[in-house]
Image (cartoon, rainbow, N blue to C red; front, side):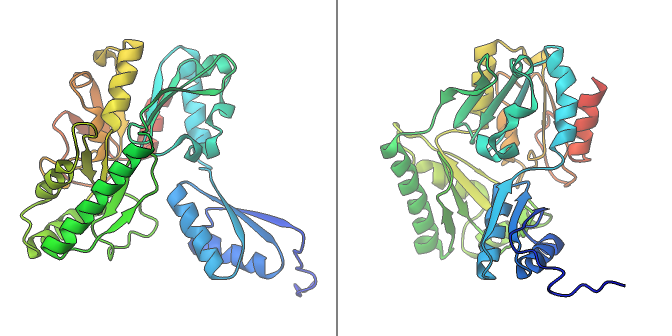
Length: 331
């Protein structure tokens, strides 16, 4: 029987591509391969997870290359293609950037003809995308402030951070990593790990922290954050309990602009998401930004499995992405 000795397991000069290796078992496998000489290339479904993985590899003395790619994208693409062929308009509305969707290569999964019916509203209102006749992504609308405007957003977020610390003794972290808004971590000690969205009990934990420091509710924090806007740079604040997101635009800007541009009728549309749930009875998740005066007569569905309060127009289905894929496949 052959034995696996260091010599027979020498991976020097080899590249190891490992999916989901930003933490856990995948990372352990990657570290073992790196120890035997392999160059590590890994992917994960979110940029935040990729960044976290790269930092962990660097801490272990390993130079790794990480990319955003969801290996489950094939199911979504296969479900979308027949609808796009039929002329059904599909719009992806997300807080992420184009580069973080299929590694910036979403258009490579479709034909130019199919892409005539695919649109994206990204970056929490920052960009609206379509595709040209060659199937290349084209920015239809760019709402990113100029340098002066971005500095105004950063300044407002620092003032929010300072107000919470000096007046109430609440320490927060600021993340300057989005094209047109900032994320303020209201609970830095609350580590979500690989979970990126609202978790069970987080809203109650935040409410307890705020009340301990003399703030009656998260609504007070939202109002305070938006008060730092100006007529030239009004601010919109949303929260998922852990993060307060502050900037001049939101998902509502993406949705309303796409409706105005293409003449959609809300009655002919349905809206799907997994971030509708509220941290209070009146402060809902970022997907609730798709619920506007122009869209409110459409059908809204939430596939999150988390229990909680949602806008009354939103029907809770649960089941995650699989529920949405089953809907697409049934059309």
